[in-house]
Amino acid sequence: MVLASAVTAVGQMRHGDHLLLGYDTDEERETVLAAFLLDGLASGHRGLLLPPADMPAGVALSFLEAHGCQVDEEVAAGRLCVDAHLATPEGLWDLDEMIRREARRAVGDGFLGLRVCTEVLRAQAGKGLKTLHDSELLLDPVFAALPVLGICQYDNRVFDETELAPLAGLHHGLVGADQVWRDDLLTITRTFAPPGLALAGEVDDTNVTAVARALHAERARPASGARIRLDLHELHFIDVGALRLLVFSALALSAVDGTLVLSGVAPHIQRVMRVTGWDRVPGLRFEPDGDTP
Image (cartoon, rainbow, N blue to C red; front, top):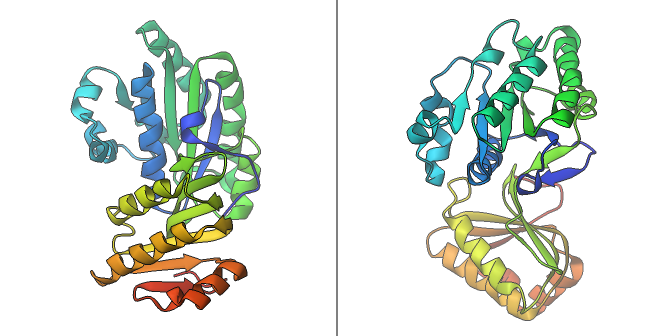
């Protein structure tokens, strides 16, 4: 599900940003939050996680360990914190005051700011989401006045689009995962539902190595593994050298019973691949528009 709003890469967030993360998979949530919290550690910020249930800090933050973070050490030093405030029945009512207090405490402890991540259960949101709506409305003055950055998480599998649209309007925009690559010609973005990569712009000999790196890294991604999906709907040009790379990658995947799936291939690119016979290469599959696994 995509809400119509500006999307900010998590690595581009600034003090005062109050953004909404509507996630489709646990991998997407953990990818964005890991970048957010680890960037905070590098920037001299305290990280504060407000989960929807009471749980030990080591459990709530365990996803950071896959990124090399020594969670127990960071928690012991006060650089990462977990608070069960939102797990209490009254947690939403004074959320603004709680974040205001924690932001001031972080600065008093010598940090340069506070990064806060919130999430609530659907049952805690109040009738018609009114309690949640009112709570979000009160947060904006806090973000405007203090050195705090925030991500409010909403599970798209629980909240539907009609519920999230009004809430999105109470934020400064949406937040998403950092781009894998960006130059003047090409943007490579990780996708999550379904998992894969999206290429937008043009691929030529100046950035084909970036595509190769991205494909190689994608093979190590648990959600993709030996089946890599490339979304090419926004790809306007790809030179022959880059097409050869796709063929080479498909053959390598085929050798381990894998597949390179191409979605949204432009007609002129399809013609080139038909003429060369590359469309019949083992391990390469074209996904018809509207057909997602």
